[in-house]
Length: 147
Image 1 (cartoon, rainbow, N blue to C red):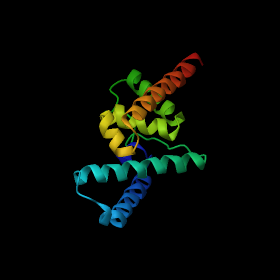
Image 2: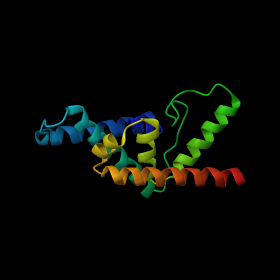
Image 3: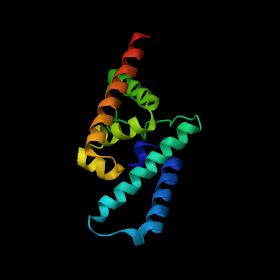
Image 4: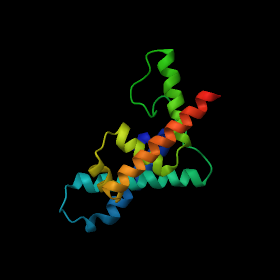
């Protein structure tokens, strides 16, 4: 999950370490009323979201490279490489909340319920945020097409 939010191996390691620390500190709070995987995914989601917000406040956008790009499969042609680069640039222009919900819904293919569990948002809120994030992404891509 962290590789979808970070641009280089050092950042991924930093996020993974932060997740480990949060899990270690909160292990006593795990209630076992849900699978451990869900509890861990929620902590990981919050750590990734915090990373995006921190990068945004610092004015540094998260860089993407060929090894940690937003689209999982490598391009097979120049046209798909161009499309991939356009999408990566557009994703970097989204707010942390928009990028988080797009990544979880579209790239990680999580359901509304799973995203709600991971983020602490209601399913309705997830649905609205996903809709607005898609609209923002569409707008960014259209603006770039006009240039």
